Length: 109
Image 1 (tube, helix red, strand yellow):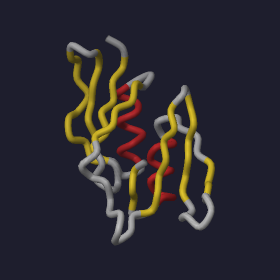
Image 2 (cartoon, one colour; image 1 turned 90 degrees about the vertical axis):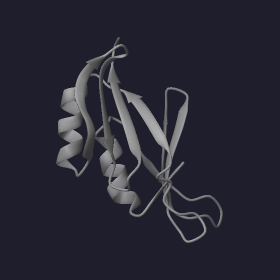
Image 3 (cartoon, rainbow, N blue to C red; image 1 turned 90 degrees about the horizontal axis):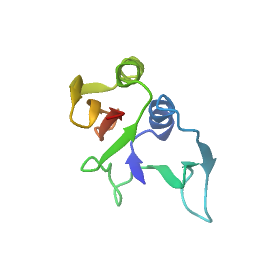
Image 4 (cartoon, rainbow, N blue to C red; image 1 turned 60 degrees about the vertical axis):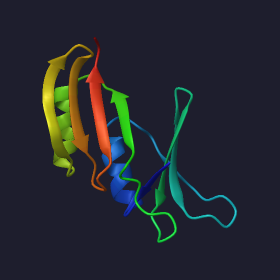
């Protein structure tokens, strides 16, 4: 679960990585986005005073093409922390989403 200032904006960002979201609400809980893919559950919840934005989180995704993904994410407002470059783990880049979450992207090794 990532806590976000604007869950619609966050969903747009993570959709650029190929994630597919549905809006959910459980009982009296807040409206949020959920994505279930490849055995993973990834959710975007609104931040609140009790549960602020989760910027200390660092997440990673394997993508088909790091360079293309970085360009697509920059278009929707991502900040590049580490530009695409070859590494021992394959092609790699690090960006920050619109709430300041650090997102590492890699392609193959």
